Image (cartoon, rainbow, N blue to C red; front, side):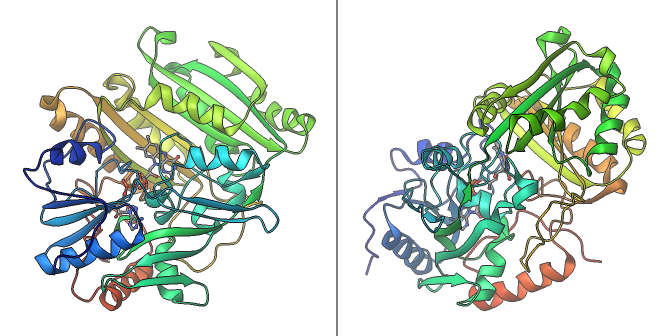
Amino acid sequence: MTPQIEGRVLRRGDYRYEGLRREACWHAGVPDRYPEVIVLANNEDDVVGAVELARQEGLQIAVRSGGHSWSASHLRDDTVLIDLSNLRHVTVDQETMTGTAQPGIKGSELNSMLAERRLFFPTGHCTGVSIGGYLLQGGFAWAGRDYGPACMSVTGIDAVTAAGERVHADEKENPDLFWAARGAGPGFFAVVTRFHLTLHPRMRTTMNSGYFWPASAAQDVYGFVHEIGRRTPTEINLLCSRDPMTHGEPLLALNATAFTDTEEEAREQLSLFESCPARAQTLATRLNEVTDTGTLSRYGTDTHYDETKRYLADNMWTHASFDDLWPTFEEMLKTWPPAPSHLVVFNWGGYEGAPARPSMAYSVEDDLYYGLYAAWTDPADDDMYTRWVTDHMRAWEPYASGIQLADENLLNRPYRFVTEENLRRLDDLRATWDPDGMFVSWLGRPAEG
Ligand SMILES: Cc1cc2nc3c(=O)[nH]c(=O)nc-3n(C[C@H](O)[C@H](O)[C@H](O)COP(=O)(O)OP(=O)(O)OC[C@H]3O[C@@H](n4cnc5c(N)ncnc54)[C@H](O)[C@@H]3O)c2cc1C
């Protein structure tokens, strides 16, 4: 019997199939990978139905929440793609500071709802990213150093398993599934239909300063960020991309954001950036602006994430000195791709205010994060920009301790994204929860040993 599914079920060749497949990838570089069936789930029962359908038709399962995976890891051949973008229900209990959210809700939307109640959840730095894929891979947010990866603010999940069963998982019930849900990212082997969340009080003050330099200041600016990154409570976001301010040459934009109780404390924190050795070379500054994370997100998204472009991302965690990274960086500056291609660096680990990590699949992080993103228009340039990103990140491998699954480039450069021990445990759990290999996994995995 055909499983009951209320939402749309589109097969290859159906009218609207290709439109929906393309919409499932947020940028224009949609890969040539074709699910056999796309199920646009209306509710959790539809997810159960879609899992049954996959089993009946001998297909694997891929899952999409927001479609913001750079590599579109949810677009796979020979699969049923379960599209959860319509599962967007949110509940908030202001008194207990807890809530639930379905995976299709965008982080920015969730935070706008919470702001009305003076609450906060560590959602991503950009508007548009849904919480489904984001929370499964860890989740790097505004104030993330204070709360840890956003998956640490997840207390449980509701999920549909490969057997088509609806289960709940948290520290007590199905703790192994819960362990995997906090860090397995695109290698997770069930469909999350709801996250149970801890909510946080909204920060009283959010203050941001911006400093802008020509690329000639790079050694001083990056050296400074490497030096102070661990110890400052301020969140640093250092971005390099071609910009009109430097007549199309690479510009360095340092955004420093302080989350404090008072404006006075924030100003005090941000005064550190006046001591940057390159201070005298700034082209422009924007100092001590009182703002909020919604505004900061829009500012970053509008300028650097253009859905009409094709994108490739790659990344690394590192605690290296910038002197070690400089030769590759210097080479990159000579061939920097057109805007909005960019390199972003943020400070993360080693910070003494960071909360202790619980046992979870997420297990690789370091002092600083380097994310590299090429954006281009012409498909004929795919190989060139893929090489540009991949080869430069490969050149930095001797200084990398791992990667995030957020901006992964596993097809071209598989690299360590969880510890080896956790990778083995994830394999074991997959064999238990998905013995028939119904769920697709990571697009690539690091070599053992
Ligand atoms: C413009 C942009 C900005 C970004 N900014 C940030 C940021 O600030 N911080 C950060 O941490 N990351 C960021 N990312 C990375 C982003 O968080 C990840 O790509 C994340 O996977 C996107 O979530 P999504 O729901 O859109 O995932 P999708 O693309 O829908 O899914 C990605 C993978 O996650 C799995 N998955 C998704 N939902 C489910 C589910 N409900 N159940 C089971 N498996 C599921 C699937 O395996 C799927 O292949 C950004 C990405 C982009 C494109």
